Image 1 (cartoon, rainbow, N blue to C red):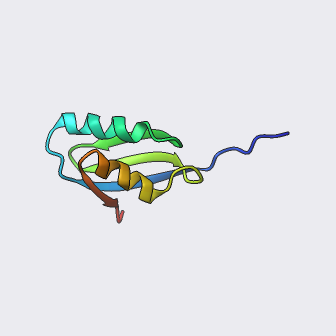
Image 2: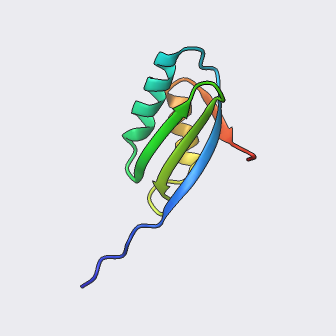
Length: 79
């Protein structure tokens, strides 16, 4: 029986509402706990959240909801 390799997707979100480096750590911690997320980096200067995740386990909508639960709004980045 062979295991199917996960399909890792890169998603970029544009975040709003954070104003300090501790906000970055909070978002990274919350998103990093989500099953299926393999990496998360928040770029404070550009307000971007870069996420590597298995799209079959966690959707973009779920990731946005996790950021919202942490207290910040996010949307899919246009570029």
